[in-house]
Length: 75
Image 1: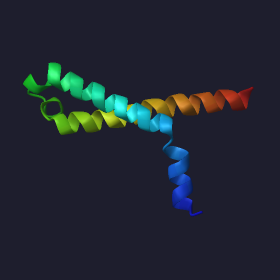
Image 2: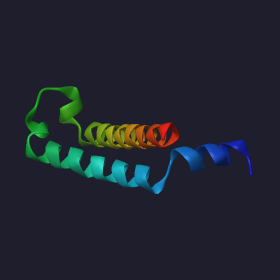
Image 3: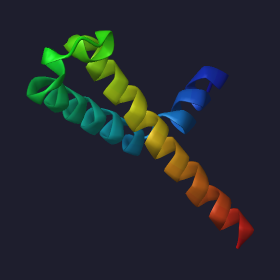
């Protein structure tokens, strides 16, 4: 198995995918409710809001996962 496959297997789990999907859905829901009427460039575009949600979901679940792994190593 190549190093590239190991990297993706380690850094893109089902939890990451679920968090990214949830982040995208919540970001688009926010855009639909109030963001589309904003003058802010990020809030004005549904594509940018969806990308922001995906990025936020990935980062949040990665922080939780790394924190959990650190706690397990300390015990």
